[in-house]
Image 1 (tube, rainbow over the protein chains, first blue to last red):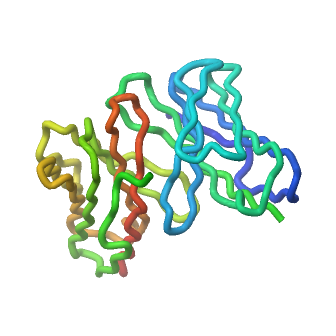
Image 2 (cartoon, rainbow over the protein chains, first blue to last red; image 1 turned 60 degrees about the vertical axis):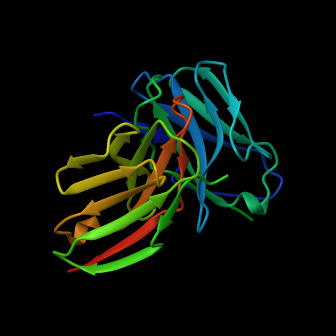
Length: 113
Length: 111
């Protein structure tokens, strides 16, 4: 059974803290994505990666960075968390072909106080 | 930028009824996908329709695509309480795997 896992389901951090959100997939997928989901705004793409050590900005990259040192792992980093980064964060992966579905992790609900 | 807009935002029906959700998008696409999300969980892929297809079925799901109107619809027949969830359309305009999601339709099926 294919799986995308995220390191935490719930996370509470303080303003200014550095936050790491980890995502691991066991499907040998080349593509990995980070989204944030907010009420009324749907899913917005933060960053994505098509290969190890490769990253591209999505629609809302400001305040975030990513790391992809291994094919199965894609990390989202909030360098200095702010309250407006309180959100649900979803990781996904897919095969390299363009026409394919994305497999999602369960999500991390991050609260920044 | 949001590519897909979904209508209605919320839908409440009785078990056994059909549910129809619509999605409109702005640019040319290679394919359109529908996903389901149970409350507080990740998304699950339901069905993918390519730009050269007009209709696709999967179990109780029927998806149509009208590229001339830049719109798609998802029909769930004989709905069940377990179908209660949010449904999102997503478009792939670049054939790169990068998807743009709509804001979703929240479906409530009352037993």
